[in-house]
Image (cartoon, rainbow, N blue to C red; front, top):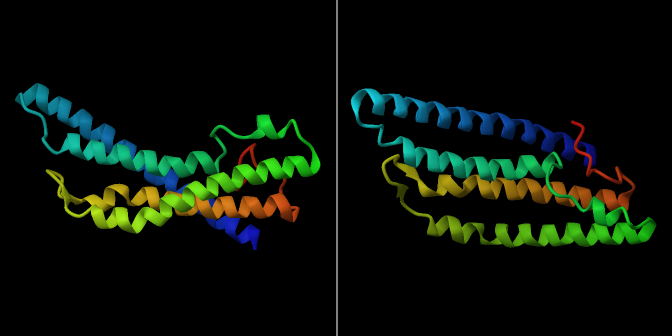
Length: 167
């Protein structure tokens, strides 16, 4: 079962990388075009700045999952390497539970935040909910990843995934 979840999460990781790169390419291209237009016509493209702000938010939220999934974040390995056996498992479990608790709080608030995010982003005519939706998708994927990691700690699976995921 864990292998199937891991395959799913790795596929989500690849989709997130493609999405993040696409957003970044569009942002850079749009800003280059607006600089050229501003130089030639004396006036930039009005939609580029708010579109760039939305794109930046998406990059952060999408990247949140990518960084954690690929274990490019700050890990507990420095602390857990000082322990062996049961003590190491307990420390890793405490860290995993703290992360899962934070994700649970964020996801619990998701419906309320989405409800408060009515309206549109001015100029680009994009629903405000679309700006923050990637945050909650990332958090849900991270929670699934964290739960499988917790099962691995106590279930005899891969003991240390701090070196990265091998899709």
